[in-house]
Image (cartoon, rainbow, N blue to C red):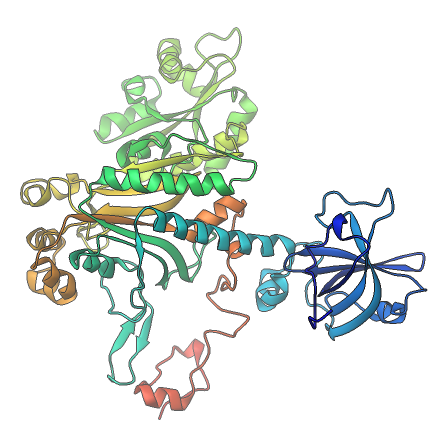
Length: 601
């Protein structure tokens, strides 16, 4: 054997290698003592090989000393496992290595968290010792899946004519969007770079420059609060832009890419081939969400007319007093029991609601059961049952008020009913395009119109719509792709006209001069021949999270921060030294509760 550490990996040997010799190196996964015969499961990146040492082996004393997670080299002979001891669930399960020599390459101290067996363990400990956590089989496999997904995305984009470009990491701060991470400039005292929230402006400028099809597996940085489906600090996206395209062109280009990736990595799950296009307003009304989980078949409908002037005074009074009030019905097939209805009503109260009205239908009970049924009478109850396509054994829940105030709660109720009644197919991926987002929204805090989403989107109707329509009625060529209740992509056809760009910002209170100052690069570029263009970005982290069945992005990320936006492994963020602060011309002015030992001169 000429190699210092291995002739084979720990996942390589097969029954065809029996009667040969090998040298393997790796981590001791576990040690088992079976009547004086030691079995060592040796693990590396590629797999696990069973090593055997008995009292007759020259290296038996060395084998007795090794412990879990020690790194060792093993020389030995490859032999077929005795009949009845094979492990057909393991690629190397038909052979074992009879050890003739063992060398300890690296001892391990007592482990702060277990690697074998993967029991639950405090997250902060897992993140502090992430290099150990990453040895766990599931997490190691998830990271490798992520690597393969990124490679597949890159290959598919190259295959359909896109070119990969890298855009700057140090850039200018943007006044729109999320909070920036700022980087002080030493050379320009008092000035700051920003880490890019996305390559949005750069990729549009590339279209103006004539590159036609751009993509990038782009790092993005946003100083946002963490949550399960969004890591603090940084994330990655498949970012892309195309020139001379419509919204339909973008869908036709990217839909096959994403479906192919999901079909490649789906495991035992199925992938729905059809991807419906659902207007934003319809998604809100049917599903109570702009990222609906279409595995859940439940759809809400307005039933306001059936309560107007009815004997159910609570709803009837709301309708009479406010023309914007609506009553939405949520069907619950096979949910027709008082126990289930009362449980849902109790849940609603935990969500800060007064309750969740309901009607349910039982055999031999005309007109339905429950307080609402008794108040509105059998004729109205029957009309609701017919409209919602319900029957005996089913139930229907009701939410009332102005839709903009209750739709999120209604959407949460839909999710819960679908889960409680086992209506959701957990073994499939279901996609949709959400289209026709509102261009503007009303900011109650600032008492003005503001952009609802991407300010660089093209308003439907162009500058004519901006000049003549109520801003809150204008739709954008803005779209999201959703999967199983998660937004996995967002994009738009861009506003490439400088006059339209200025007008769009003027309606939010910005002057032309402010637009030119804050978005000077884009504004100047649009003066010199900008093509119609559009694009989108797919969240790589969320794609992988869905594919591996994880519920937290930390399970598919190499070195994530914790919920307090701290990197416990590297100790970031950390205190700067006085020398660093002097070089940057920065003096700290910390809140009293967060005083630090570092002071600038």
